[in-house]
Length: 424
Image 1 (cartoon, rainbow, N blue to C red):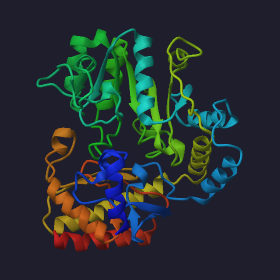
Image 2 (cartoon, one colour; image 1 turned 135 degrees about the vertical axis):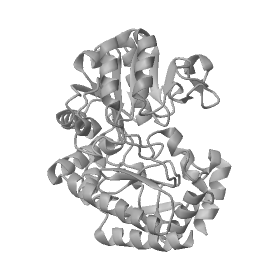
Image 3 (cartoon, rainbow, N blue to C red; image 1 turned 90 degrees about the vertical axis):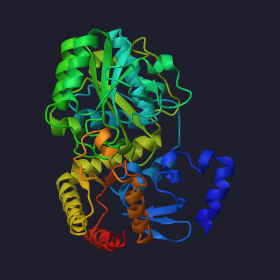
Image 4 (cartoon, rainbow, N blue to C red; image 1 turned 30 degrees about the horizontal axis):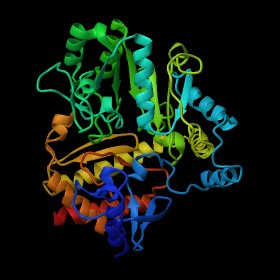
C-alpha cells in the first residue's frame, strides 16, 4: 500500500514520520493514511480510499474541502504573488471583518499560528500588567511555547512543572495550573496570589481534551477575579472563533475578555494566527509601543485571501443554526445506538463540535476525561475508519462538522456506528 510505504519513508526523514504528533496514530495504533486530496466532506488517500472527514483539518474547514469561492479567490491571489513582507490591503480588510465580529477586539495583529498568537498575547499581557505569573487550566492546549507546555504540580496552587523535556523549570514555575471548571480554586488562587498574576488564559470551550464545556459561572468567575485583581483575561478562541458562532465563544457566553487569540477558520485552511483586544493593550506592541513581535510571513496574502472569503461566506450564509441542529441530531443518534448496545459513554457537544467519551461519567475537566476507555475508542476508531468514516485519531480531540456534510453523509455515519457498535 502506498500510504504504508510513504510512512516508512517519512520516518527516515521526519521525526516519527509526521509533522504533528497526533497524526502518527500513536493514541489509536496502526499507521496513518496519507491523504492525497479532499473535496467537500470527503478526503481521499494515496491508495484511493474515500473517507467522510470528521476532523476537517482539526477545525478550520467549516465550509468543507475545496469550497469553490475560496479556491477561486486563492487562484486569483496567487497570480499576484505569494508573499511580500510588506503591507497589503487584504490585511486591513480581514482585520476589519474580525473586529466587526468580535466586540472585545479593537485592534488585531496577524501571526502565523495559534502557538505564536498565544505566545505573543502572553508577552503583551505581562508587559501591560508588569507582572510575570500566568494561569492556565489542565487539559487546555495553547500551543507548544515553553510557558504552555506545563502541567499541574502535586498539590493545589503549586507552581507548574514542565510537561516536555526542553522546558526549563524556571519558566514552567511562572505558570500556575488549575483544573478546568474549578471556580473555587480560581478564587482561592487569586486571594493568595492575585497581585502577582499577569493573565489567565483559557479555552472558553475546551477542544483539546475532547470537547468540554464551561460550567455555569466558570467563565464569569475568571472575568470577575481578573478584573478585581488587575490581571488580564485571555480567551484562546483558535478553535471556537467563527466555529461556534460568528463572534466565537465570547458571544455565546456573553463574556468580554481583554485579549483574544484566533486561528483556524480566519485562515480558511491556510496557516494563520492572530491576537487582538483592547486598544490600550494592543498599542503596546511594536512599532506603536515597546513590546517586540515580528514575522516575515505575518499577514501572508494567500492566508488573508482564504480567511477573508471564508468569513464573508459565513456572514452571508449564516450556517450556525443548521450546523448546530445537524451536529446535535447526529450526536443524539450515536448516543442512542451506544445506549442500546450498553456501551458506557458521554457526549459533549456545542455548535458543530463534539466528542464521544467512552466513560459513564460526566466529562467536565481533564480528570473526568481521563476516565475514558481509550482502548475501546481505538477499536471504535479503526472500525469506523475501515467503513470510510475518519474520526480524529485520539479520544481527546474534537470532532467537527462542516457545511459540506450532507444528510446522506450523516446517514452513512449513523449506519457505520450501528455496525461498529455490534462489532465492539
